[in-house]
Picture: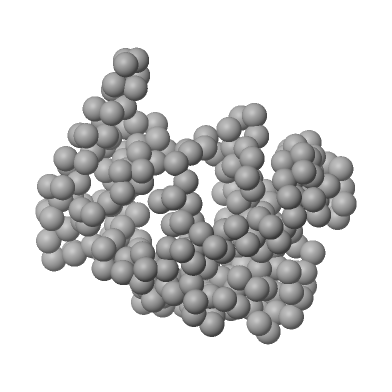
Length: 256
């Protein structure tokens, strides 16, 4: 066994052992998810500890996003219908996954921001726990074809601005060739000039995967919860305190 693989497996065991000893954190965590945390933290165990604590704390303090997540619920099915959430099947040569997000229905009266974010995280959880492959990064593509001024009233512009700065989004004109300089054309869906299949084919694949995890979603509310009454005094983090101080409803969250 190569030394690097041995070290990574040893790190995983150390990480798992630490998690089992944390009274406030969930213990029933998929090994694949733990590997993802280690990988994303460049196998720094201390960073992985802080990150997974924050991960579960955010979830526990945002029940409107991470609880009552039924793939068959009317509001979730509506999100599936009016939005396209598409992790594409093939990666770039740099081992990055491509993700397309777009509104496919211009009737924004059907759009609910919180429901859309909840659905997005349901897809993210499906990928985190079902996809064995761990990419080096992700390239998000937001198609604004059906976004109008009316959409502004649906989102928090301050949050959107900071998100765009954080993700370093580039802007491309409709049907511009410049997109293909950042994303290889052949990796895109047919509607974008690529060879990755149609949007509908890719979308149906992921909807089926999410629906197949229905029992997991319905029982996961408490499995991944944090019990703050059991948090050790030596397990404090300023970021955790900031999360706990957030307003009770995601709808009232505003960052200036």
